[in-house]
Image 1 (cartoon, rainbow, N blue to C red):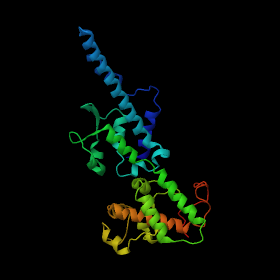
Image 2: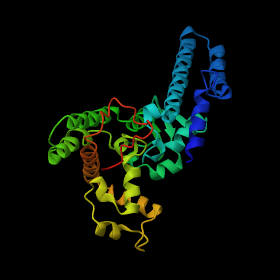
Image 3: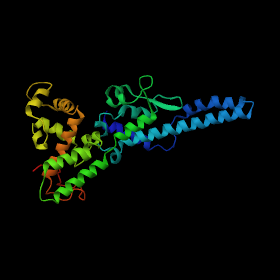
Image 4: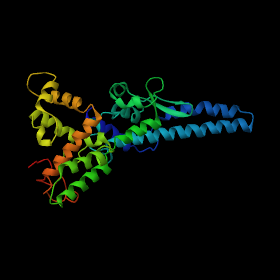
Length: 298
């Protein structure tokens, strides 16, 4: 999905004037039968039951609005990073359906479910972790949980900054110690999708740098334990050249195994730490100031 179009749709929802974005006709269609039932009720108990149904409907509308608001925030780079659409399980098409009032929503046993867009259903590997109703409906609770997992991992990012700044103040660089610290104490327990796709340092992510170095055959510069032979074996076109399309496919193959991916990310940040240990304090400086390139490996 085009990033500008996606952000525009999300922003349109956030800019709305009316606090309730559920179509008035939809609310009216739900309320009209209850109004008729209330007027036809001959007892206080009957009327109270109708009022309870109205309260349930009000909560359902409120829950839908909460889900829409949460989905629209995925375009906020301060919360989800600038590469949200690059993450494997972004639910981008379903998010658009939700904020555009196109998503099918149903209540089952007191819980609300939203229909997952077919395109997301095909590509989202996280869906095997939950019970889908009728094949393609996910509960609001599980959906919100998945959105949260796509947030920018500020905790891990800050921890990596702190390690690098500590290294800058040290005379010696113990590569194995730094690697194991990053791998076991930060990356292994952090949000891997964020550490792969978000711009932790500078204007490029681990994924973008990895793909570029695959094309340039300079992946050693990132400290990654992949060999030229491995890359050649994974080349889908087998023509001796790694195009952008080839690199994307190879990246997917190399990062299919979670444990291996954790190693790659740990190697990447270890190399970054080693080659930037003489730079000014990264936590305090403006990473986007002119002339500063955190990927300028010495």
